[in-house]
Image (tube, rainbow, N blue to C red):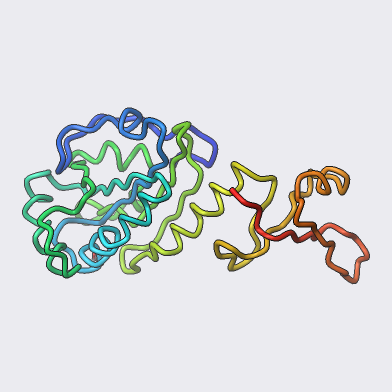
Length: 221
Ligand code: BEZ
């Protein structure tokens, strides 16, 4: 069973391409993404790992550490890295973030990263993503099928929303991007909103007549 939003991300100690990692020590006071891959030397995975490597400065700006996981050995992961760097057109010989080795699938099992069992052979991990906060709690989980590569710009967008929600009593509406107007939390009264949002807020005029959809310019961090 995958850990639920709000639960502590299961801790583990595992080998990786950058040596032994204990998840909770690795996170320390940062945010983290933990994302799984079906197997080493698979095409879609290669494109995804390359993209995360390209986006690393964006993750770092947001104080997010990246951690990939694949159920092969770290020796196999290390042999795969030149392909990933080549695909990302990087002159670097390292990804800039570790790939965890989970040969016995214990981490994959703890995180619900395995599909329903298949009668033939060992099931490969699916494409899960967990965003983990500095408190080591799960803030988001996503599961994609093996045949669909993920969109890591979307993961950055969610992290922007999550980090904004820590500092301001707002939520973010459909297709929100950093800088767009935000939604005032329903738990905030109009009186409180006047204090909290100096740039103002406005209730949308809706057929129900209920003023529950209140928009405010994105608060400063
Ligand atoms: C891939 O990473 O390319 C892949 C892995 C398993 C199934 C389908 C695609």
